[in-house]
Structures are given as structure tokens and as C-alpha cells.
Length: 417
Image (cartoon, rainbow, N blue to C red; front, side, top):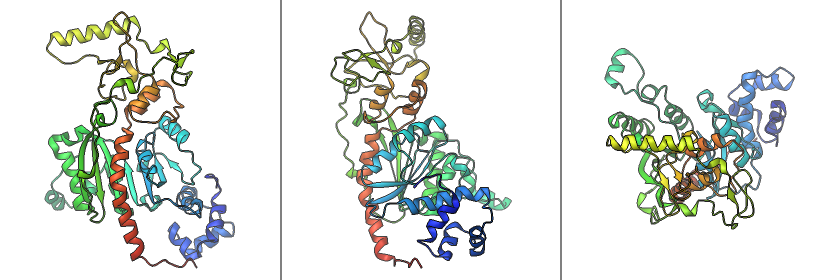
């Protein structure tokens, strides 16, 4: 089904499955409004996206859909978190990502042929327009939280709880969707510094909102991507369940952190397929454009020497095949200084290619990179280590399925007409 199908055709097809009353309830309009639309009254423009977002997932799910559970992908970036949950049988029913370049990469790897729309700014989406789902996924950006005493707010007659303490932050949008849709579980990912931001107050607010305001059983753990890839990359993973599910971090299997850069670097010996954007020739030699210019290399060496003399640890990070890299950041496109690959003592080092960045984040070589190198560096620097998410999903999904089956047993199917 075409995601751009006109609203009237969507309403016509939906009417073959749902009664007028049910359809009105789905769209949160009265039945007389539906009848007026049916006889030719123009549908207001603000209703068009709402109709598509609410009806497309219902009408396009295959009749033989065997997905184990559904999920939504918020602050989706290029889909690293989605990969981990699709692998275990999940079906994405809603995606939000505001950056147009990230959208391009996301759509190249997750085409919109599954019926749901990719929307932009989540702050502009009504929670009622988000489809029902079993799991909410989100690598939400961390913005400063302002914590205010509830008693003071009460005295001033101002709102408190998550509607106040997280207002103006993107975590608020996670909270309001959880509050409205009550998914069985969620997974949130963020930088390590979230734990210490504002002397720990920010993280304490997040936990209080999730536990006390929203009523979820919440677990969190700091996980270093080095267990899966040759990169030191610590991230906080927050997992929550609407009902007690027996989730335990002790079930996590973290391999020995023995990965080395040789596993992700282009071998340049003819043993891998050439990708002409980055490598060429019979041996797959890396394009010279990734080697630092003499001017930039001189600057980085001078900068490092100056800070070393001052007793600081600032400087470039030089790696070889036996190394573990520093954390890949979104600023890598500027000078590549945190991860420079040695090309020998008499040669200037080089940047990683975007494909090597993808591998360093655990993405498969089949992952499409349709954007410029600059945008690719930003995207992988902002993404997740995919195998970390896959491992968390491995121990999380069975608990989700227990809740899915429990709910199925408790509910009585409603007649369509």
C-alpha cells in the first residue's frame, strides 16, 4: 500500500474492516464528521497526516504477519537500535527522526514499504497519533533538566511531575508517549555523562519520572561497546517494563573485550570487495583523500605537544591493527583526531573511511551509506554499537513476549462490526 495514498481511499479501505463507530473512535472524531467526509466535504489539512499515521499501520500489516511484537523507533538516527529488535522478530510501526540526512540513510536501509510513515520532529506529533506498540525504543538527546520542588510548584499553582520537570527537553516527548500509549516495555540509550549531569540530578529526575510518575519497573546499566567492537564506548542503557517481568542484567552475555582494529580496517590485500567511494584497484587500496594533509598533520602534532608539555592529556589518538580506539564522535568529520590510523613511521596517518566507521559501530557491510562522508561521520558518531543493542534485546524480548502472551490471554477479542 502506498504511504501517499489519499485519505479518502484510506477511509474507504478502513471501512471494510471497521464499523463507522470503531473508525470514528480510531480517528477521535464523531460519526457525523465521518459521514460528511464520505459525501464530499473536504478533510481539514491538519487531519490528513493523522489519518495516514493512524490507519496505514492497521491496513498494511500483512494478514499473515508473524511478527512477535511491535515497536516504535524514536530519535531513530540511522536505525541502529531498530536493527537489534528486528533481528528478534519485532516489527517497527512508527519512526521519528528530524535530521533530513539521517532520514536519507534510514530510508535507504528501511524502505517505507511496511506501511508506516517516517515523521520528523517528534515534538510536533500528537501522542494519540502514535500507533499502539509493545516496545518503545529511543536514543533521546540529553538536554539540561530543571528540577524544582513539588511543594513550591503546588504553592504557586504550577504543574509538577514529568509535565513540569522535563518540559522543554526531548525526554518529555518520550514520557508523554509512554504515558499515552502505555507500552509493555521501553529501551532508552544515552551517553555516559547522563549519570553525572547536574551532579546526578538529571538522571535522578529521569528515574523518578519513569518509576513514580509513569509506574514502570526500571533497570539501567552502563555498557562498554568494547565487548563487541574495538572501540571504548560507554553508554547508559535504561530498560523499563510496565509490569513485573523478571528482567535481570545478570542474563547479559558480554564477550571478552579482546577485539582489535584489524577486524574493521580495510585489509588492502584484495580480500574484500572494492567500494569505489573509499577503495579502489585490484587490492582495494584506500583512497588517498583519507590521508591527512601535511598542514593538518603538522597542526595536530604541534597541538598534542603543547598540551603534553602543559601536563594535559589532549591530543590525537593514533591506532594500528592491534589497537582499541577511542570513542568515535559526531565531530570526527572535522579532523579525525580521535582515531587516526597509522600508515607507517614515514607516512602521514589517515582517517577511517565511512565503511570502517560503520564496522566500528557494529553495522553489517550490507548497510547502505547514501550520504556524503561528512554526514556519514556525524551519523555513525551519533549512533549506537549495534551488537550491544542486540544483546540487550536478546534478554529483553523474551520478557516482552511473556507480557504480550499474558495480555492476549486476558483480553477478549472485540467484534469488528
